[in-house]
Length: 222
Image (cartoon, rainbow, N blue to C red; front, side, top):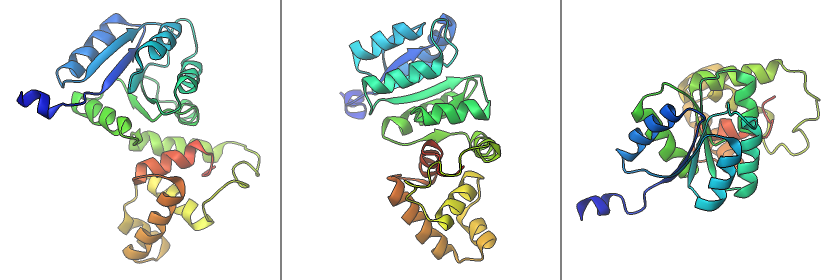
Protein backbone atom coordinates (compact mmCIF):
# COMPACT_ATOMS: atom_id res chain seq x y z
CA UNK A 1 0.00 0.00 0.00
CA UNK A 2 2.78 2.44 0.96
CA UNK A 3 4.60 1.74 -2.31
CA UNK A 4 1.53 2.48 -4.42
CA UNK A 5 1.06 5.75 -2.55
CA UNK A 6 4.62 6.77 -3.33
CA UNK A 7 4.34 5.93 -7.03
CA UNK A 8 0.73 6.46 -8.13
CA UNK A 9 1.72 7.32 -11.67
CA UNK A 10 5.03 5.69 -12.69
CA UNK A 11 6.84 7.10 -15.69
CA UNK A 12 6.32 4.94 -18.79
CA UNK A 13 9.55 4.54 -20.76
CA UNK A 14 10.51 3.14 -24.16
CA UNK A 15 14.16 2.04 -24.41
CA UNK A 16 15.78 2.36 -27.84
CA UNK A 17 19.31 0.98 -28.26
CA UNK A 18 20.71 -1.61 -30.63
CA UNK A 19 22.76 -3.30 -27.87
CA UNK A 20 20.70 -5.76 -25.76
CA UNK A 21 23.15 -5.49 -22.85
CA UNK A 22 22.78 -1.71 -22.76
CA UNK A 23 19.00 -2.03 -22.74
CA UNK A 24 19.23 -4.64 -19.99
CA UNK A 25 21.37 -2.32 -17.89
CA UNK A 26 19.04 0.62 -18.39
CA UNK A 27 16.00 -1.51 -17.62
CA UNK A 28 17.59 -2.69 -14.36
CA UNK A 29 18.36 0.86 -13.24
CA UNK A 30 14.90 2.14 -14.12
CA UNK A 31 12.80 -0.68 -12.75
CA UNK A 32 14.70 -0.52 -9.45
CA UNK A 33 13.33 3.02 -9.18
CA UNK A 34 9.77 1.95 -10.02
CA UNK A 35 9.94 3.33 -13.56
CA UNK A 36 7.82 1.26 -15.95
CA UNK A 37 9.65 0.11 -19.08
CA UNK A 38 6.74 -0.44 -21.46
CA UNK A 39 8.80 -1.62 -24.43
CA UNK A 40 12.30 -2.00 -25.89
CA UNK A 41 13.52 -1.50 -29.44
CA UNK A 42 16.78 -2.34 -31.17
CA UNK A 43 16.08 -0.52 -34.45
CA UNK A 44 14.52 2.74 -35.53
CA UNK A 45 11.53 1.06 -37.15
CA UNK A 46 10.89 -0.99 -34.00
CA UNK A 47 11.06 2.20 -31.96
CA UNK A 48 8.46 3.95 -34.12
CA UNK A 49 6.09 0.99 -33.94
CA UNK A 50 6.56 0.66 -30.17
CA UNK A 51 5.98 4.39 -29.59
CA UNK A 52 2.73 4.26 -31.53
CA UNK A 53 1.57 1.09 -29.76
CA UNK A 54 2.53 1.86 -26.15
CA UNK A 55 2.29 5.67 -25.84
CA UNK A 56 5.30 6.09 -23.50
CA UNK A 57 5.89 9.24 -21.48
CA UNK A 58 9.60 9.28 -22.31
CA UNK A 59 11.79 7.64 -24.94
CA UNK A 60 15.43 6.97 -24.08
CA UNK A 61 17.00 7.09 -27.54
CA UNK A 62 20.45 6.12 -28.74
CA UNK A 63 21.32 7.95 -31.96
CA UNK A 64 23.34 5.10 -33.48
CA UNK A 65 20.85 2.58 -34.87
CA UNK A 66 21.35 -0.09 -37.54
CA UNK A 67 18.53 0.87 -39.91
CA UNK A 68 17.67 4.56 -39.56
CA UNK A 69 19.59 7.70 -38.64
CA UNK A 70 18.90 8.51 -35.00
CA UNK A 71 17.93 12.10 -35.77
CA UNK A 72 15.41 10.86 -38.32
CA UNK A 73 13.92 8.57 -35.67
CA UNK A 74 13.79 11.49 -33.25
CA UNK A 75 11.92 13.68 -35.71
CA UNK A 76 9.49 10.89 -36.58
CA UNK A 77 8.85 10.16 -32.90
CA UNK A 78 7.96 13.81 -32.36
CA UNK A 79 5.67 13.63 -35.41
CA UNK A 80 3.81 10.73 -33.77
CA UNK A 81 3.27 12.72 -30.57
CA UNK A 82 4.56 16.29 -30.32
CA UNK A 83 4.44 16.26 -26.51
CA UNK A 84 6.50 13.06 -26.26
CA UNK A 85 9.69 13.65 -24.27
CA UNK A 86 12.78 12.20 -25.94
CA UNK A 87 15.96 11.91 -23.89
CA UNK A 88 18.97 11.13 -26.06
CA UNK A 89 21.39 8.75 -24.34
CA UNK A 90 24.51 8.36 -26.45
CA UNK A 91 28.30 8.21 -26.44
CA UNK A 92 28.63 11.05 -28.99
CA UNK A 93 29.54 14.46 -27.59
CA UNK A 94 29.87 16.29 -30.92
CA UNK A 95 28.40 19.80 -30.40
CA UNK A 96 26.93 19.83 -33.92
CA UNK A 97 25.08 16.59 -33.17
CA UNK A 98 23.84 17.97 -29.84
CA UNK A 99 22.50 21.06 -31.62
CA UNK A 100 20.80 18.95 -34.31
CA UNK A 101 19.17 16.77 -31.67
CA UNK A 102 17.88 19.78 -29.74
CA UNK A 103 16.63 21.45 -32.93
CA UNK A 104 14.89 18.17 -33.85
CA UNK A 105 12.94 18.20 -30.60
CA UNK A 106 15.02 16.33 -28.03
CA UNK A 107 14.12 17.32 -24.46
CA UNK A 108 17.54 16.29 -23.22
CA UNK A 109 20.92 14.97 -24.28
CA UNK A 110 23.11 12.96 -21.89
CA UNK A 111 26.14 10.77 -22.37
CA UNK A 112 26.31 7.07 -21.68
CA UNK A 113 28.18 6.46 -18.47
CA UNK A 114 26.22 8.96 -16.37
CA UNK A 115 25.29 7.73 -12.94
CA UNK A 116 21.99 6.09 -12.10
CA UNK A 117 21.06 9.11 -9.98
CA UNK A 118 21.77 11.52 -12.87
CA UNK A 119 19.81 9.37 -15.31
CA UNK A 120 16.77 9.21 -13.05
CA UNK A 121 16.93 12.96 -12.40
CA UNK A 122 17.15 13.62 -16.15
CA UNK A 123 14.23 11.29 -16.80
CA UNK A 124 12.11 13.00 -14.16
CA UNK A 125 12.96 16.45 -15.53
CA UNK A 126 12.05 15.75 -19.15
CA UNK A 127 8.92 13.86 -18.18
CA UNK A 128 7.60 17.02 -16.53
CA UNK A 129 8.47 19.32 -19.42
CA UNK A 130 11.99 20.29 -18.43
CA UNK A 131 15.19 20.24 -20.48
CA UNK A 132 18.43 18.47 -19.63
CA UNK A 133 21.81 19.20 -21.11
CA UNK A 134 25.17 18.72 -19.45
CA UNK A 135 26.68 22.19 -18.82
CA UNK A 136 29.85 21.35 -20.76
CA UNK A 137 27.77 20.14 -23.71
CA UNK A 138 25.63 23.26 -23.55
CA UNK A 139 28.68 25.54 -23.63
CA UNK A 140 30.27 23.56 -26.48
CA UNK A 141 27.02 23.58 -28.46
CA UNK A 142 26.64 27.32 -28.06
CA UNK A 143 30.25 27.92 -29.12
CA UNK A 144 29.80 25.63 -32.12
CA UNK A 145 26.65 27.48 -33.19
CA UNK A 146 28.35 30.85 -32.87
CA UNK A 147 31.19 29.72 -35.15
CA UNK A 148 28.88 28.44 -37.91
CA UNK A 149 28.16 30.53 -40.97
CA UNK A 150 24.42 31.09 -40.84
CA UNK A 151 22.14 33.48 -42.71
CA UNK A 152 21.92 36.73 -40.79
CA UNK A 153 18.14 36.62 -40.92
CA UNK A 154 17.85 33.24 -39.25
CA UNK A 155 15.63 33.62 -36.21
CA UNK A 156 15.65 37.43 -36.42
CA UNK A 157 12.13 37.94 -37.72
CA UNK A 158 10.51 35.69 -35.14
CA UNK A 159 12.94 36.29 -32.30
CA UNK A 160 10.98 37.32 -29.20
CA UNK A 161 14.16 38.14 -27.27
CA UNK A 162 15.79 41.52 -27.05
CA UNK A 163 19.53 41.76 -27.71
CA UNK A 164 20.25 42.02 -23.98
CA UNK A 165 18.09 38.97 -23.25
CA UNK A 166 19.98 37.01 -25.91
CA UNK A 167 23.30 38.05 -24.36
CA UNK A 168 22.06 37.02 -20.94
CA UNK A 169 21.06 33.56 -22.16
CA UNK A 170 24.46 33.14 -23.80
CA UNK A 171 26.03 33.81 -20.40
CA UNK A 172 23.58 31.39 -18.76
CA UNK A 173 24.55 28.75 -21.32
CA UNK A 174 28.21 29.35 -20.43
CA UNK A 175 27.37 28.37 -16.85
CA UNK A 176 27.56 31.79 -15.19
CA UNK A 177 25.53 32.43 -12.04
CA UNK A 178 23.24 35.45 -11.66
CA UNK A 179 25.90 37.19 -9.61
CA UNK A 180 28.59 36.52 -12.24
CA UNK A 181 26.28 37.75 -14.99
CA UNK A 182 25.67 40.89 -12.94
CA UNK A 183 29.40 41.53 -12.68
CA UNK A 184 29.85 40.94 -16.42
CA UNK A 185 27.01 43.31 -17.36
CA UNK A 186 27.54 45.73 -14.45
CA UNK A 187 24.04 45.06 -13.14
CA UNK A 188 22.62 44.24 -9.75
CA UNK A 189 21.54 40.65 -9.12
CA UNK A 190 17.96 41.92 -8.92
CA UNK A 191 18.18 43.39 -12.42
CA UNK A 192 19.65 40.15 -13.76
CA UNK A 193 16.78 38.18 -12.23
CA UNK A 194 14.22 40.56 -13.73
CA UNK A 195 15.57 40.25 -17.28
CA UNK A 196 16.10 36.51 -16.91
CA UNK A 197 12.51 36.03 -15.76
CA UNK A 198 11.32 38.05 -18.74
CA UNK A 199 13.30 35.80 -21.09
CA UNK A 200 11.90 32.67 -19.41
CA UNK A 201 8.36 33.95 -19.89
CA UNK A 202 8.94 34.77 -23.56
CA UNK A 203 10.29 31.28 -24.22
CA UNK A 204 7.74 29.47 -22.07
CA UNK A 205 10.58 28.00 -20.01
CA UNK A 206 10.50 27.05 -16.35
CA UNK A 207 14.22 27.34 -15.59
CA UNK A 208 17.55 28.63 -16.87
CA UNK A 209 18.62 25.42 -18.61
CA UNK A 210 15.30 24.99 -20.37
CA UNK A 211 15.44 28.60 -21.56
CA UNK A 212 18.95 28.17 -22.98
CA UNK A 213 18.02 24.90 -24.70
CA UNK A 214 14.82 26.38 -26.12
CA UNK A 215 16.76 29.38 -27.45
CA UNK A 216 19.22 27.02 -29.16
CA UNK A 217 16.30 24.96 -30.54
CA UNK A 218 14.83 28.08 -32.16
CA UNK A 219 18.19 29.32 -33.42
CA UNK A 220 17.95 32.49 -31.34
CA UNK A 221 21.51 32.51 -30.01
CA UNK A 222 23.36 31.94 -33.28
